[in-house]
Image 1 (cartoon, rainbow, N blue to C red):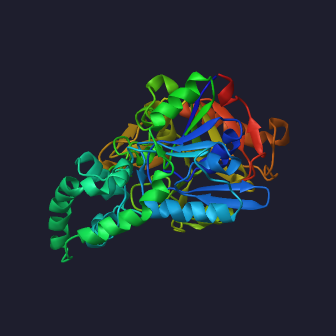
Image 2 (image 1 turned 135 degrees about the vertical axis):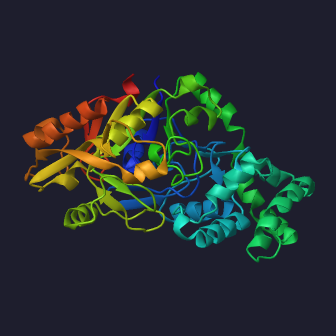
Length: 429
């Protein structure tokens, strides 16, 4: 059976939660393979709204949900999220939820360092969520991280703590902060250890068994390709690779397991936090897009910047992430516009570019080249087939498809799971 990998094709917030939820109802396992609790998915199922930031979206449908080794895990945030979802009637137990025992942990001093550095950065602020994701990944790469498996061996943690405190105490001193309280840290970890270890296991082994049985696996990405540490708008990016290839390394399965790569893209563009945004609209049109699209971050509540669809960026995302098909979301937000614009290229100091340059100064300086189309005044909200769409909306979808050089696999017309126009079923390949 085919597997599916879902990734964001813009700067995140593309509506992945709804699409993953829709696909999860037909999958046998859902796997988070990178990021932490700095990304949020909102699921609307009937009258119930679920807000997830760490747990895979499949948990709501009772599908086996796995946090892979590529994720950095805040154990206290995990406990709070599980408690909240159980309060909404969601069953979470070792039968339907597992955590990779080699996941790196996000610890309290990671959050402290994240906030201290961002505050001190001045004009160089990245716009992080302040949840300690970046510092946790730094410790993982620096080979001083405390991992989930270490929670079962806290009495053998001293050598790791020596490496950890040698690094962090020097940083903390630079900010006028006291050294890490090792006794307090061990006490905090002891208090949460059993809660996390209940779900901990070698998930690569469990996934191997699932795959061998011919089951469908859905790999759920967080953030978007434009926030990828290598391929995004560096340095205004996240701390992990968000491209589809990470599904293999971040779960313990090989690259052949990735399957159909479904990129999610809004019918317009949004961005949270700092960084370049060529098609940003700081006018009444941008305001209208934000209001109609309810553009506020699931995790932070921060207002999102809004602009026209940027075909150059999405085409580039599709190329570097091997996207098989695109899910175009929030088409209904464009209802009622007299004209709609699509960015088809950039102008940089008199030169025409058909790609987004790597250097941040060039990224900030590019001017979008627009193509203009007539809009539509009929409603697309809730449409479930092409026959329900205005002719001009269909023309818009087809033009986007041409410009990004990637087929549109489905179109989403509301937050509701069933309000989806399916053109190509990712699970049928």
